[in-house]
Length: 560
Image (cartoon, rainbow, N blue to C red; front, side, top):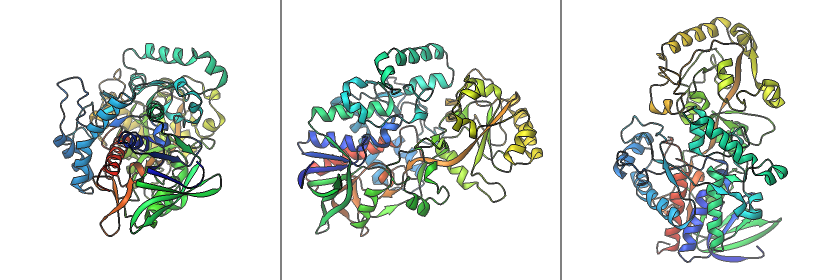
């Protein structure tokens, strides 16, 4: 990209929302320009599982699994607690299925519904499955040299930290459901049969999840002759007469102007990796190193929009998750599912359990902050497990079966090991009497399959990642076989979800209450339609793609 340019639609960012907007705008006949500040494209979406939460998609394939816009509206409305305008919720539940149908029809993404329960299926309008959808896998060789520029999958979303697997395969292996051994053998065979790639790189050319999603969208853009311009950073928006007409960008140290005749769409992710902004707005989780998101989410586009009068909401909100930090990794590791498996508990620094460990990661991360006290700090908390768990299941960077000494030094440095709970209490600097009493009470209850304290295993979501071989409660087992283990965890996140206020057309709203002409936003840069809640797997990407779709339609229509 050289010199001043003019385009119809300028898109800032290269994640799922950005690329969806680009495809739709190009199909509407618009000239589209995409800029990405880093050397890698795909944003946080590329690092994720690639699942989208889309109610009433019609893809369940079973008449027993019915859904409707009314049920979806009721579910989100209950969860958001009147913090989100009804018009925005209705725009999402109405247009999300349309977006998904469009993407399935016009790209190779080919999303399919999976039986992943809503995180709060017990609430009005909640469902036991088929609102979450996973993308088709992709042979990375189809991307050619562009594969080297696709942001890799987060290490926590890879089997053994290196092998790609689908959401369906992951659920099968994690819960040890019938057929898991065959599935494991298939994944290992698939990975190591790509001999040429194994000789060149650890990276898996079998793309699943977010890498598959972004890969398919990139191929769709190439078919439309739309390029992603990497290493181009947004500096400021250009405003004339109250309308946004373009942007000033920087490429190779040179500042340039890009004029956008029909609109600028901001889809550049959140601000959770900006230490100053995080310290200002996320005071209960102030350390950006606790975030599992990719490091380029520093809020550049958010700040640029504020400088032209954009209004913001819920800047202290995020997609929370307990995380484990390894110093050599660029992002923390979220504990998405491990906490639900039987034979582990989480304690605070007083040595006590303080929540249902199997709740959704968003709820658990929020509890870590809300239940933090000076006499019982939860930062860090400790996840405890015994040798049975250690052998059977993963726990963050701790791989089952693999002996302790074969784990990287960074893992061994934070993994606490003890032969007795007395010794563990001393190593964690908690009261031995309190910890042993807590363990004894939990073990006694677990042997009966109940958790009178916090109800672990009571909700459908708890049981989704339980071990069905463990009865009567797939989420509960005693911690009674030494040696015992502990890992420190912090209240982290997978992205901010507060930010720019948008309307039902994804237009950014001014502080005066009017839409800013020519300016649109989608994804984690916005105040999410989900408010402070997390309805189900894919509730980040579903709205990002939906409002990207709506932004492109509005910008290329007669609404400007």
